[in-house]
Amino acid sequence: MAQLCFSRMKVFRSVLIALIFIFLASCSSDEELKIGVSVYDFSDSFITEIRNAILESSEGDIPVTIVDAARRQQTQNEQIEKFIEEGYSAIIVNSVDRTASWVLIEKCRQNNVPLVFINREPVKDDMAKWDKVYYVGAKAEDSGIMAGEIMADYWFSHPEADRNGDGILQFVVIKGETGHQDTELRTEYFIETLISEGIPLEKLHEDTGRWTRSGGYDVMASFLNRSGNAIEAVFANNDDMALGAIEVLQQNGYFNSSEFMPVIGIDGTPAGQAALQNGLLLGTVFNDAENQGKAAYNIAKELAEGRTPTSESIGYPIVDNQYVWIPYRPLAGQED
Ligand code: GAL
Ligand code: CA
Figure (tube, protein in one colour):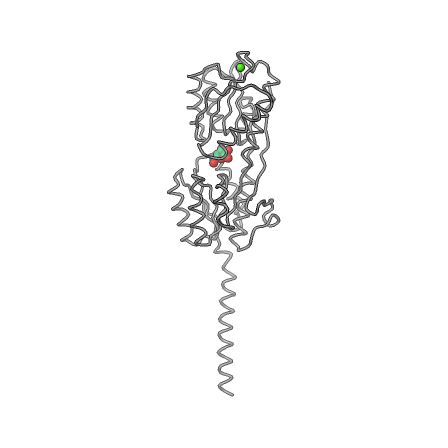
């Protein structure tokens, strides 16, 4: 009898200890959750807006640590390894080189740390390697079409835009980083849209400004050197490069007098929108950083807490189980 009582007590004691452990674990688990974020370049204006949106979403919620890969894939790989070692619960990545995403996916899969890519879309085959991988971005082709429509509207409503009167639109393109889906698709669909609008085209030059204002400035300076006033329009793959181009155009006498140059950008950054208001930028396409940042954070939070994200739980529609697309919106300035 005494022995039975003793073994019951032992069982009771171990159950009690187990319960205390479970209780303690459940108390502290949410506090220990953390989300790691690595972006390709802290100095990129648009990415800075996304970073701020992620940071804002995390206020009073699972904390984030955001690090700068400074345009080096090797640095980014090390940052992700460190997040994994330090027990981060989910990771958000804006990859330096989107074709290298599989390395990150593999690393995270082996350690069961879910991954949310933003802004630089991994190729489909890589996305298919694991179901705890998501992508939040915008459909690059849409932005190219919208930019093309802004250009076409201007061309049809401003006959003087055809400076040399040959009926052909002579234009230049300042591209983003080579190989980036936004660079290739924006350029391709901008041109396709103009063609489908029936505008005869001649692309005088194209070169990369690497998404930066100074890059846009340098590339436009060299275009002006080579072709001067034969250039009738400028399409820059983002606002920062468009602003760099506008700066060098102003130094060459454009905008000040009657010499207008249609320049189109993409992003609708605060600086881009200011240039639109001032009549320097003909048009831009709003790239919604706030909702991209929020959606990425919400997905990472669900994953960090051990749930499968759903459209309802994150507040944005998930398509093909792994993608969230935030729509673009055209922004055209007042003409004339
Ligand atoms: C694009 C954006 C660019 C640049 C780039 C970085 O979507 O339009 O301004 O931020 O992403 O990957
Ligand atoms: Ca012409």
